[in-house]
Length: 137
Image: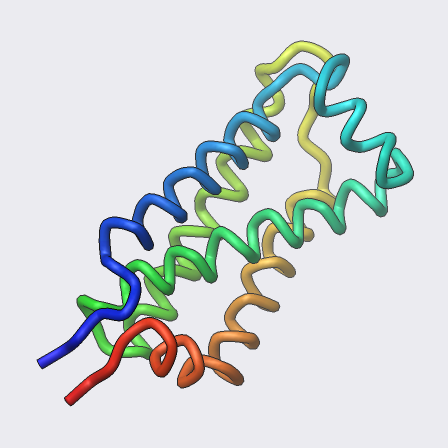
């Protein structure tokens, strides 16, 4: 039996809102909000790639948190990683169809690195997620 400390709908809502924000940022033309945000962090290709690492990594961790109520820790980690990786690559390739945007190899690599770092964090601190979000008895 599981007793959830954070309600499942709330965890799914957090993931959904973050994923929606991620999609909006990555699929918006670069001459508006995206340019402002990028400029705030330096506006270089490297700082943009770091942003991709963080955005995709957080998405993976939030999805892990929402899904861990349904599967084992290992299965949840794999599913969250696969979904976040596919999402990151799809959004990056989707930029080819957005005016003033374009896919770049460094951003595709950043998506892979973001998922990899999230997976490492989940491996290292996965029990902490479980202890704080779910009590298993």
